[in-house]
Length: 434
Image 1: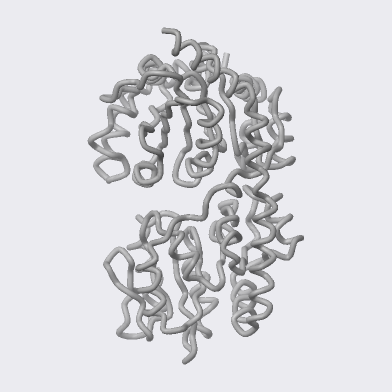
Image 2: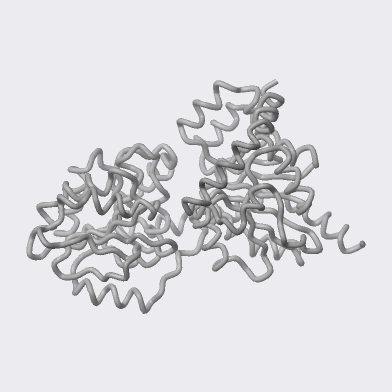
């Protein structure tokens, strides 16, 4: 019943979805030149041969899929790739990071005619979907075509889990579209099983296998020179109102003569103007908040700097001595700490960690991060670590050891993907014979 109702509702919503796309394009949130892709249409021809479709919502999700590409291509020589996403930020980054020959597209919105057009055009032989992209029409259409799908890095936030539990039959039908669900931990596996998944296993978080984000070494040298030996505290992937809360909590430290630089890297750089306005009262008289998007470098008198750019987290992580993970003071469920852990940075986080609870618990138990209850506590821990280089180094080294130990997740995930690789191998033999 819910399947039919959802399908009918999204059919009828067609005119509204068209206007929705146009409004988003007008605000710069959609690529206006590629709106047809959001309706399942493409100007690019399907490449010949076996085609693997990979999908992630945005930068983090698509990034978690990238480590799988090379080993899957070794298993399936000649494998073609179609990689979809839902944001322009991810599309920009994928254009720089995908291997030669891979096709990047936007995922169609979840309307039956649009997802059918997508599958009619691309005819993928198997698919990998990252995290929690559970679009019913998309998944039902894939199952109807007997497409072998895997959910990798599978997770459900506490909020999403509670919402799906109100629709257990519908949730189970959606999840049974996957030949396998490779969850990031046992807690997440249990959530999928509770909702009706038949083939869920815990394989670990693929972001642990991802390469550390790239960094422009010349830019890193330029920023280090601008910092003039000052310590750098990074608030990474922050959400409103975390920038204001942390800046206020660190205000006594940021006003000292030997102050560190507070580097603010918002999860969504489009919020930069709002962040600058919110921090205006905290800025010293006569000093405006300097911004990466405006070509500024931090000066010796600046207590804070706004890193409002896309695709430069590798630069900011390397510049930092201490990393405070955003999305953990605001109730956003936290963000993945593996990237700064790989770089051996001292990691602090707030209390809201629902999306990565198991990962943070294990990282903390390994001595690789500290979990704090609020902004004042984070500020206090930051001040203590800045004053204690040995403790800061021990915290970072423990984080790096933990990240190296997590890297085996790639082998576990590839083993779980046997149904997908078998489908791709069969498709390769079929295409080779036609």
